Amino acid sequence: MSDDRPTRRDLMKPVQLLGLAFGAALFAGIVTLVSMGFFQQGGDGKAQSAIVLALIIAGVTFIAVLLIVSLLLLAVDPAQVTKQVDKPVLLPDEEPDEPDAATGGDPKA
Image 1 (tube, one colour):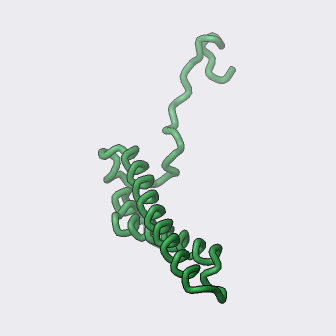
Image 2: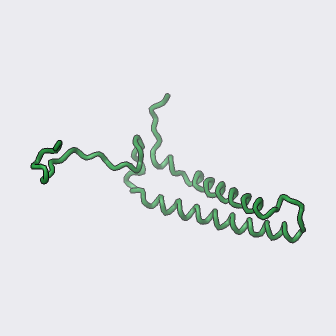
Image 3: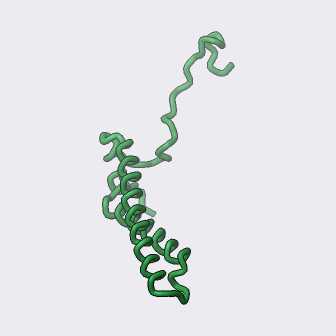
């Protein structure tokens, strides 16, 4: 096994983010087609309206996922982009025990 840990820049490549948004849009479009009965025997007008609605929902989903992920990426400090990720990202940094004024300076009390 390798000790080579990925950097945050490696974890947040734009092609992967576009792939995630495209996958979510594809899923939303297929779910819309299935829920509207596109794959059942039906009239021509029903199939056409199902395709139009599925394309609209897929487009909205694609844009929404890209917007949400890009806004979440803005929360990352650019100075930490090159740092290696070796612990969970959302855990706070460990601070040493400081004496508490309420316990009389004893950190274990």
